[in-house]
Image 1 (cartoon, rainbow, N blue to C red):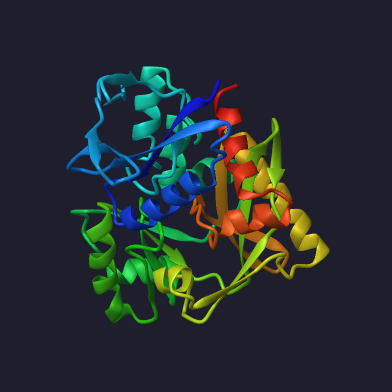
Image 2: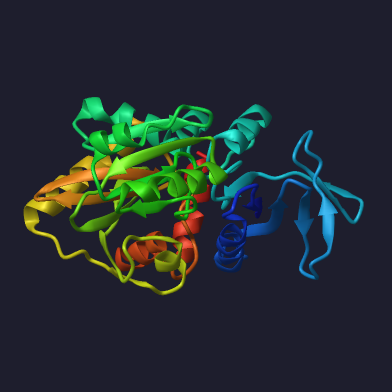
Length: 324
């Protein structure tokens, strides 16, 4: 009997449109012989089921159900394609855990931890996973530009602590640019992280649970035309993504070991895509994404394809693992 799968997409953040693209790709490639797929749009204004004619039906938030043609539809599993809040920060995960509905991403604690860059890097530091020197600010803190530059140096990166797709991020070359970058980051989040610039090769590492085992996918080297891997580089063709990455044997061994360790130490499940920068042979972690992009052009699906895993297989496996 075919399973009813809700594909949630949208969300409350600046990544709304990107999430819609990911969700529609999942909807397109999910095996219709095995699953009944339903697109569920989550936004601040409404939660709705979108039928094939783009008509909207309200979702009952009490039990996450939909009434279609007088039939009360409940879902066997939720495929999470929401980037940012509430799909990547633990809110939706906790909601589905309370309802007892399996979902494809990590559990609520892991989602909240990894979505918070500051907490993630602090949690992984005791395991030998390195990160850039950093300076933290919360909205309302006194801002001491001199202290920031003394701690992290120039150039540096100013980032929203809890945001994705490079929203709210700036590369700062001079102290006089700091305040504008801080204001930009605070527009996305009330916590920010300011990090020293790491001048090295950037590599993206996909790690998934595949057929019950932790699988590190082929590595991707990021070569951007811009100062860093920003929104334009990610989504508007201003970068090259080279898979497999051009690394030495030692570099590849180190980054694979650390990416797998991070995934297993945090008791992750589902998809993850972590970003690292190499200084010599040592990878320094920047962040971990737990609902990465899932379009045909996105990094993790490209890595899966090179590993011999098609999009239908990738998406079916995520559902199978979630429903175990």
